[in-house]
Length: 262
Image (tube, helix red, strand yellow):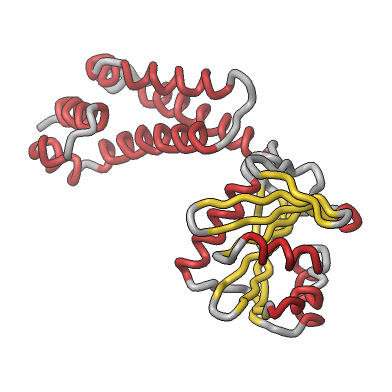
């Protein structure tokens, strides 16, 4: 089977969400042809990335519409049009295909990196869920507040003020350097009994806390919410220029009481 015919078959599989086994000859060709593999992989990566970004985060006005329209335009192309970019005598076909995909990815990347407020709450939930799955693999394993603070200053640029985490029967476990929206951020890992608790800190007061309900404890403004089995409390520490969150599978009132002690 030639590349053009195999790609036509596999585009139908992709566009119509069919199982690859429904096109056995095309699947065999795809397994043996690296050029076809690369083109399909790039096509699927762009579609998946754009769908994920437009589905889970708030985007600037008009950007979501433009991206969705671009993807729809690509999906609505007939297989003849898609394959016409690959025909002999069309040397710029591969360049055109790659350019469209690269530009789309660049738009998403620039938008994500330039928006420190986009997705802080979701990021906190997703990182905590990932570390639960992975068993909390930390760069620093220590219950010594002074040692944790020194490590945070050297690697992240600000102190964790770790001694406060030992209040309320929470056990300090260590820390990890992280990235959020292009900023060097941090995870401090705690435990209460057998429950893992994540404390996230982003060095910016401009980071917006979205999708949570506002609470107040004393003079401290807090935001609370939940996703699945995890609860979250988020707040600002103006004296340290930090936006923080605490995520755990603990009752929300217990998290609020602990944050009130910090």
